[in-house]
Image (cartoon, rainbow, N blue to C red; front, side, top):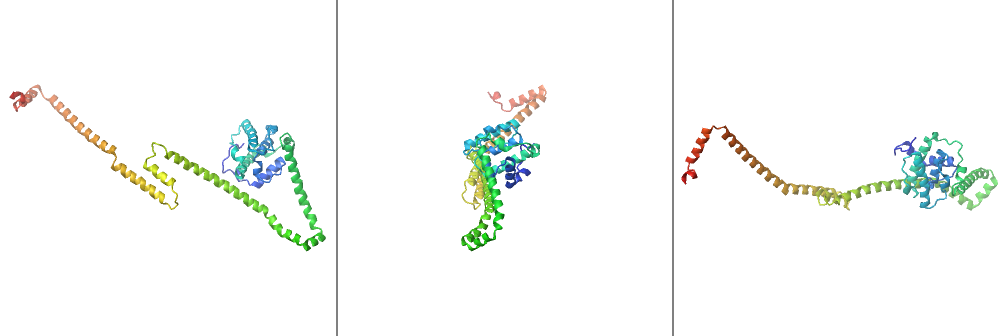
Length: 326
């Protein structure tokens, strides 16, 4: 059973038309856009179709128009997710906005999950009856039935008009009908335009997501550069030079590299820490030499016999010792 699937899974490559036909056939609805299900009521009933009776349908509102009403539907959906131990995160704040891309991705996941439950088969499930207890469910069923009957009637009337030659002759003689005929290709091309508009909306949504992602990264870098411990370092100054550059001619990178190299030279040439370390090293070497000499003299004296030590002392007294001159 799929609860969390990767973004590159085949479920996310299912088209909008297939998603809409699946929703309409499963729930006996007549949705024309995926974002029409942004209220969350359709998601609740799809889950109820996969697990009959687990969703409290009396709490679902098919007539939700405002965001706070939609959020209540998503709360019901989240409670069912918790019961089924589904760990899928529901981005309610994005779904209630009605964005096509967000709603399409979540509905693709819903289809993948429902297909994984009993191979997508809903035995003896009556969506109209289950929707009767919902708020606005009866009106939704009536609208769907009316729209389906109207579409069937329009398709049935088209062949009859073509079998009446007299009506065709009158329409050919009437210039108004000729203008209507001229506008029919444009009307027939409207679905193609709508599809292009939907694709453009999807691309805009993806670009906005990418923009927000990289803007958040830049903002995190800016906050890090404002840390007091590193705020005045040459590297941070170079990073801020690139962040706040207004020109796109590429000079900001060269200037930032120059700032880093200058700062490095200043640190190497004028660092008091290096001078102190050199003085400490020289003084420590001198102390080590003195200690070595003292240890060597002490070792030599210890190796002499008592008579040699006495002779050395007498030599010191004889060579103009201050004690002898007194």
